[in-house]
Image (cartoon, rainbow, N blue to C red):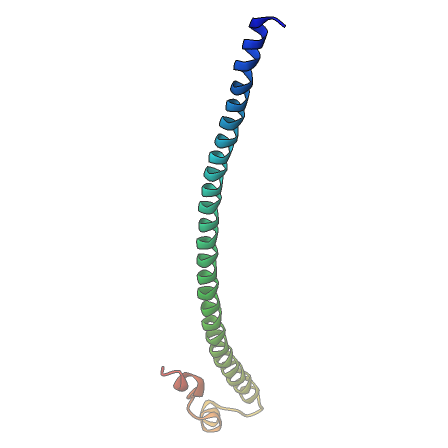
Length: 118
């Protein structure tokens, strides 16, 4: 073999080993950066999940309050519908006058409104 080829091989082999070591260390550094980015993403996802849980709890409380309000409004509406139907039934009787209607029905005092503090 020629001396130049032997010298080139002797110089080339450590160069290839050095290139491999640099590639491996750079990929490890890139992996560390990738893991740090993934960790940041995981932290962000966890915070989003915590925020979503808090929002779900707030919405559940709102739904609970709205259901209570709906029940109160429904009770009051049922009361007034019954009052209106009773008044119409009594109003259209033969011989009914305003005085007789007032005596029959009496004062209107809704119990639902009194129970709600109105």
